[in-house]
Amino acid sequence: MQVIITDAWMARTRAFHLSGVKLLFSLLLLSVCLMLISAGMYHWVFMKGAREGWPIIGSLVRLVVKDEFAQRDRYVKENIEVLAKRLGEMQAKMLQLESLGERVSGLAGINPADIAIKPGQGGALIGGRDLTIEELDATLSALDLLASQRTDVMTVIESRLFEQKIKKMMVPTQIPVPDANLGSTFGWRIDPITGRSALHTGLDFPAAPGTPIYAAAGGMVVTQEFHPQYGNMLEVDHGNNLITRYAHASKILVKKGDLIKRGQRVAEVGNTGRSTGPHLHFEVLVQGVPQDPQKFLNAGKGLAASQVAGSKTATAQR
Image (cartoon, rainbow, N blue to C red):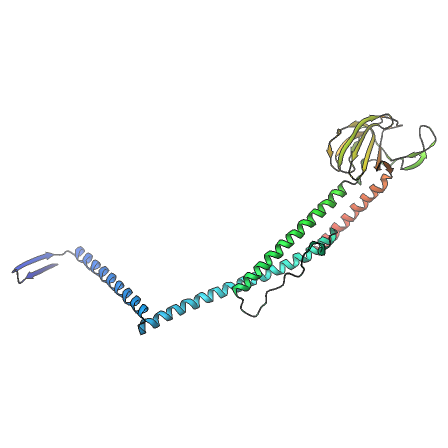
C-alpha cells in the first residue's frame, strides 16, 4: 500500500509505502490510542458527574452503590446465620459438658456449689429473628467465660481424682504372693515352735524358696535388714502411719530409701529367721499396731470385682 501526501503551500509531495505488517501494526496502535483516550474521557466525565451530581450519572452511581451494599448485606447476613448456627451447637455441647462435669464432680466427692460456678450459663441461641453482630459478640464472650469456668472445674476434679487414685495405690490391697495359698491367719494360735498360745500378727503365705514377693502397695522402703525373729525383713511406709512388713525372705531386691510401686517385685520367699519352713510372713501396721491384713486384701478383691462389673456394664451399654 502506498500513501502520497501533497503539501500545497510548500509545493512538495511525499510518498510512503506501507506493507501489510506495517499497516496492521499501525491500525492496532491507533486502536489502542483511541481506547485509552476513550477510557480517560469516560473516567473523567463519570467522576466529574458523580462529584457534581449530574442527573443521569448520579442515578447510575446510586444504583451501583445500592446494589453493592445489598450484596454485602446479603453476604454478611448469610455468614451471621452460619455463625449463629455454629454457636448454638457450641452452646449445646457446653451444656452437655456442664452436665458431665456435675456427674464427675459427684464421683470425685466435690460439690459444684463449692467451686463458685454459676449453673445454667449455656442455652441455645434464639431463633426466628436476625441476630446482630453485638449479640453474637456477647454470646461469644459468654461462651468464653463458661469454657474457662468448665476448665477450672475439670482441673479441680482431675486433681481430686488423681489424689484419690494415689491414696488407693498407697493402701495394701494386692496379695504379695499371688500363687501361694494362705497358711496361718491373723489372730491367736498355737505357736509351732513353743507349742503355746500366741498372737500371730500377720498372714503366712507358704511357697517354694525363690518365689517372687510383690509390693502390696506403693510407698518408700524404710527398713531393709536382718532381724533375729523375722529374718531378712523389708518394711514399706505407705503414708498415713501405715506400714507393711515382709519377713523371712531369702533375698531382698530393694534397699532403704527406694520408692516402689504397687505390684513391684521386692523380695523372694525364704526360710530365714524364726521360721519352720519357706513362706512369707506379711504384716500391716497402723501407727505401729498390727492389723489383720486380710481386711485390706479383701477390700482389694471387692474393688477389683466392682471395676470388672463396671467395665462389663459399660461394654454392654455401648
